[in-house]
Length: 136
Image (tube, rainbow, N blue to C red; front, side, top):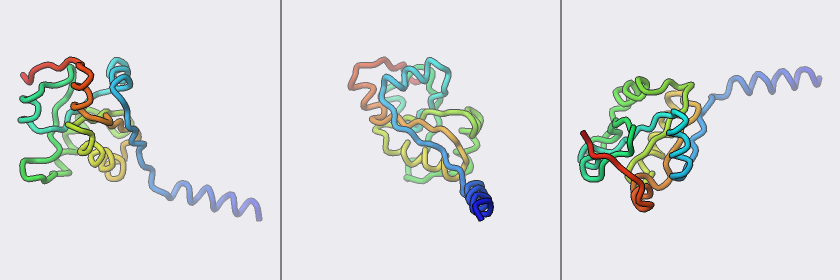
């Protein structure tokens, strides 16, 4: 009887979908992760990048277009050129809201295992007078 229960529990565990951990991080953790080689993807718009600049080393892939739409397959294809689902990835936007949605998408639809969301986004980064570079 115990063997059957254990078998059923194991079977259910493997049948359940595996979702990523979307972890909110602060600027100190962001700096540490970047230094360890985890890629940072800035999902803001080109206009936002021009206004404020970028954190050095950021990759730029807009998540939402000017009309508030997301082309999920195209966006995922671009993300996968930077990190595969088995690799960690950091997302940043203006305030942390878009990245929360993007992180859930990566977790639930694309199977990413570890996604980091910069809690206060670039606003938080700039509020601590941390450096940015102009969009090239």
